[in-house]
Image: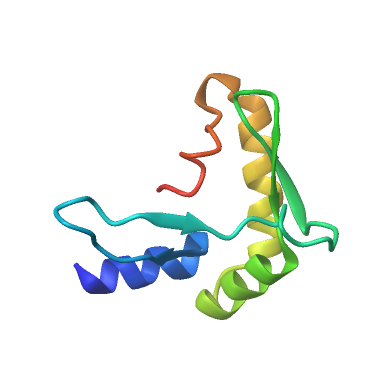
Length: 97
């Protein structure tokens, strides 16, 4: 299970924050909104907002998945989300598989 967490962390930029008295682990998503740099890509959300993917996140994905054309797949994700509006993600759910 630990390996799955590491893979997911590499993919969606989350990091484990810890466990407190029986509560579930909190997950913090590293959003490009915090950075002032322009995002690498922007994905649409069901709320009409946009989810920016930072250049740092893009570089993490490239490093984690060297056999994958990450730039092409991120563009495909964007097109897929527009083509399937009923399957668009929420801000909370976009980092999940």
